[in-house]
Length: 149
Image 1 (cartoon, rainbow, N blue to C red):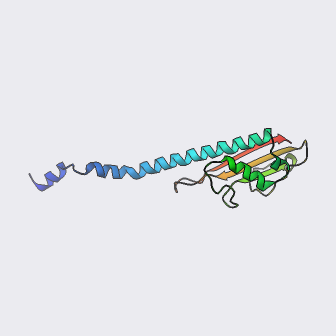
Image 2 (cartoon, rainbow, N blue to C red):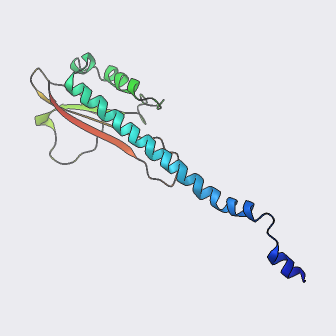
Image 3 (cartoon, rainbow, N blue to C red):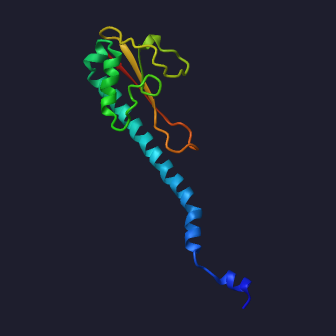
């Protein structure tokens, strides 16, 4: 038997090589799935917080205390340390319904006007989910709710 035939029949180390070929794609798939789960959790948490604020408005919301209201919302989000961060944290807007633009606009966090009693208020929030896989685009959880103060 020639050495070339022996080489073709030799299977030692084949499993390690095959695993090495699929390990990286498998790891990226698992991390991408984890990133999507974190995004869904963040979306659900922000949605729950805003709908709860609409049904029973917090004192911070009624007093137009934006930092206090952001702190209350961030206390409900379990895994984000940068929630209160100005650049990468949660962005919250509140405005009276007649002041809301009719075109689709980004949530910038510049306005926080909760109006007077019996005003209809639009409360919007957005927060970027932590990025685990660089190939997956940035996922941003957004939610809005309309309620009468």
